[in-house]
Each structure stands twice: as structure tokens, then as C-alpha cells.
Amino acid sequence: MKVRVQGRLGISLLGATGSIGETARRVIARHPDRFRIVAMTANRDRAKLAAAAVEWPEARLGLVEPGADPIPSQWCGGRACLVAAATDPDAHIVLNAIVGAAGLEATLAAVGVGKRVALANKESLVVGGALVERAVKAGGGEIIPVDSEHSALLQCLTGRIGGPGPGLHPVQGVRRMVITASGGPFRTWDAARIAAATREDALKHPTWAMGRKITVDSATLVNKALEVIEAHVLFGIPYDRIEVVVHPQSIVHSMVEFDDGSVLAQLGVPSMELPVLYALSHPDRVADAGVPRFDPVASSPLTFEPVRHEAFPALALGVAAGRTGGAAPAVFNAANEVAVSRFLDGSLPFGAIPASIDRALDRLGGMAGKDLSSLLAADAAARSLVQEYR
Ligand code: NDP
Ligand code: MG
Image 1 (cartoon, protein in one colour):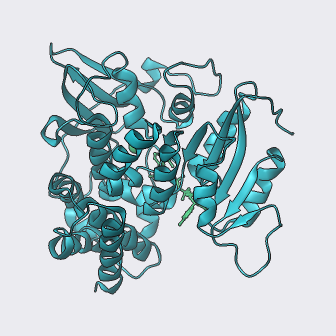
Image 2 (cartoon, protein in one colour; image 1 turned 90 degrees about the vertical axis):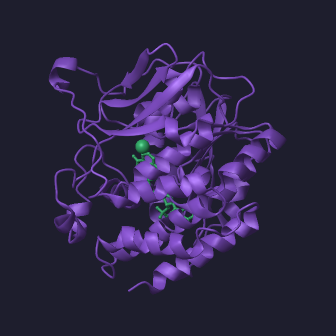
Image 3 (cartoon, helix red, strand yellow; image 1 turned 180 degrees about the vertical axis):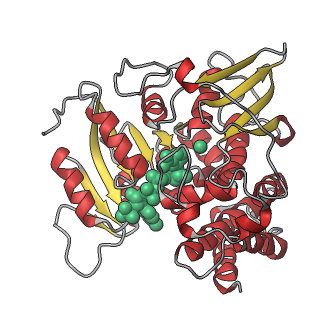
């Protein structure tokens, strides 16, 4: 079925072939009167991108790694296609669903020309938070988070955002933010068993179906560290007022405690459909029948547990990197990206993921990170260090 395209908000979808990319195409297709896709990119999955293009025949297409076969003449090839799609004049919103630090340049480019970025690519804010803030100020764009926890925080904060404080969405009257974590597949495992976990073990997430990298990040709790840094950059809230709590059912997506002690939470069945739609429609809510209905009785009981830091050292490593600032978060992220990819290809055990991140931060965490080129240098140094890690 062809989706009806009318003069509505144009969306450029980066990472259109991934897990969030697919969810986004489904959500957008339900609202043809409001949205249309004007551009889509993928890394190298040409067949999936071509299949998505059947639904959106007018979308411009970009493939970062086109391979040896020539791509159709109307497609764009190479890394430049990401910035081209991020700055497409027909796009009002850029939905960045690229995985990894590879998404940073497109985020910077989009906010730099005044676009809204619906941001799933949390690595953009972890690696280049200060740069993104500067680009938002200079270009007049904005970042609306797609990550479910940050979407929840933003929804709880409605009416409390603004003012002169730090962050992309300076908050007022907030005492504390509580970010929930499912705990991942190893929530109840002891440290020795976790260190020897297999790829199959790590890819079995209890509550969310996602891409492979974020699924492994959820098993190490690296994902939660990335999210703490993301919350700090988005809302300008100091690290000592951000807490993480384990909530195995993934129903409460996060909470905000206000100065008077009141705590607001956002709840729902674990599904990325709502956070994707909300990032497109914020601050409005759009009537939508696709999000699974929440049944409080069926979802009971809702439970909360402390994080077992001794079993999941990567969380504290990442938060410490966030506090250090400079290039440390970029080093944390790059070391993790390489460690995860080596774990997935069988050349590193699970336990070496936090160990190799620790080593990279130890050696490189003090590198400067004041501009894009120094951040990219730190990123590259961390990648080669972990590539050699034994
Ligand atoms: P996937 O691995 O499923 O998809 C990644 C997408 O990015 C694919 O379209 C892929 O193209 C493309 N891509 C990969 N590498 C590059 C590159 N170097 N340059 C350009 N494009 C690239 O990931 P997810 O959809 O799971 O995650 C995407 C982002 O969203 C991540 O930052 C993740 O942390 C975040 N997120 C995801 C959630 C989820 O539920 N999945 C929830 C919250 C946040 P190709 O298919 O050709 O490889
Ligand atoms: Mg999340």
C-alpha cells in the first residue's frame, strides 16, 4: 500500500532500516495527514532501504556504504548523505535513529540549520553534548528525545521547562530525576556468571526488542550510563541529582521529583511507538491507536530494586566519565562501541566490555574535548586501544 503524501511536516529518517527506523516508519504511516517522509538513510542494508522506498516513493535515499554495485542515480552514497538528509530543505524534523557516534555529525548539522531533531541517537549527546548545545543556540534548532526514559522525563516536566538554567531544556523546581532500568537479562546473575555470558544470553532482553548494540548495552548497563549523561545534557541537571533504579517490568519509564516532594512518573506498556510519536508532535499529543493499551492490573505488580553496582561496573564508569567531562564521555562511548562489536563477533568475552572501557578511560579519559576534532581524536584513540585489547 502506498502512503498518501500531502503538504504536511516533512521528516528525514536517518537509520531508516533499524529497529527505531522501522517503528518510526510504522508510526508515521498511521498519520499521513500530518507527516511525510522526505528522506531516508541506511548504512549498508540496501535491500531494506529499497523496500522502505516502495512505501515512500518520493523520499530521497542515502546509503553510507553502497558497496561495489552502482546505486540508482537518484540515491546518494557515502557519509555525506547523512548531512545531506539532515539538512534537507523539505525536512521540518530529522529523526536520528542511527546507532553510535556515527550519528553526531548529522545531529549537529540538523540543529545548526534550525531543524527539530527527534533524537534516538543518544550517543550524539554523550559524545558531543556541549557541541550540540552550542549548535542549537547558533542555529535555532531543538532536540526532542526519543529515548523512552527521556521522553518520560520531558512529559513529566511539561510546564516546568524554560528559564536561564543549563541544558537543552533547562528545568525549574526539580529536585531529582529517577531513571528506570529494566536490569537487562543478567539482573539476577552473579558477577562471575555475567562475565562469562554468551552472545545468545546477552541478546535476550526481557522487556524490549531493539537493535543488537543497545541490547548488549542494556545487559552491561552501559545503556543506563549513556542515559544518565543524556539526561544531564538535555535537562542541565547535576549528576548528583540523577538516580537510577531497577524496575524489571519496564512500565514506569522514569520519574521527576519536584521541590515540594511531589513525584510524577510516566507509565505505559514497553513500546517505542509512543516516544517516537511524541518526539514528532511535542508539545502536542496526537490521537493514535497504535500504542498498546495499558492495563494496570495485568501489569501488576510494579517493583523497584537498587542497582547492583558490583555486578554492573560499567554504569559507574560511565557516570564518572560524564562528571569528568571533556573527551571522557566520548572515550567511554567509543571504547564501548568497539568492545560490543568485538563481543558480538566472538573476539572478546562479555566481562571484557567493562574492563576494556575502564582501561580506555584510564589511559585516555583526560584528553581534551572542546571541539569536534579533539572529540573525534579521542574517539579514534579509544577505538584503536580497545581493538587491540586482550
Ligand atoms: P539498529 O542497529 O536496529 O539500527 C541502526 C540504524 O543505523 C540502521 O538503519 C543502520 O543501517 C544505521 N547505521 C548503522 N551504522 C551506521 C553508520 N556508521 N552510519 C550511518 N548509519 C548507520 O539500532 P536501533 O534502532 O536499535 O538504535 C538506534 C539508536 O536509537 C541507538 O542510538 C539506540 O541507542 C537508540 N535507541 C534505540 C531503542 C530501541 O528500541 N531500539 C530505544 C531507545 C534508544 P543498516 O541497517 O544499513 O546497518
Ligand atoms: Mg532508553
